[in-house]
Length: 163
Image 1 (tube, rainbow, N blue to C red):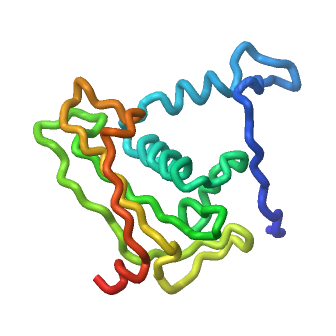
Image 2 (image 1 turned 30 degrees about the vertical axis):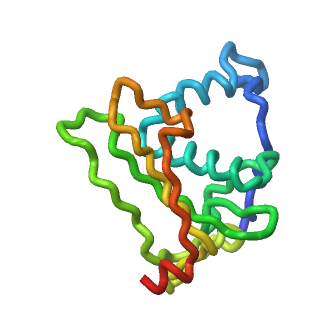
């Protein structure tokens, strides 16, 4: 297979319609986003929300779409690479007990999104690691959009590697 390169993502407005042979259907991208991402308690969506919260706090450029294939989650205007780790006491599924809090900070193999090749040596690719804890205990009042329900712990790669 020939190298097709990389598709560059661009920000969408949400008003882009689904189409059938070029003709608009009665659904748009915002309908998909609402259907797909409204459960902000689920692990995957909550993780992206945590990334967004940290991105806003660190002045990451929100005019460029999130790059899912980077070897780190965010890059600040000062070129600081940030990895986001997430944990929560409450999950979107039925629980008999609160979840135990843990963060995986082990080295990982890098995926080069320009070449399509994964590195063979696991390492830490970010300069800073932010552990995001959705610390709220009550399912009835849990609101991941309320930033006061979160705690954030920041460690440098050097601190983590020394541990």
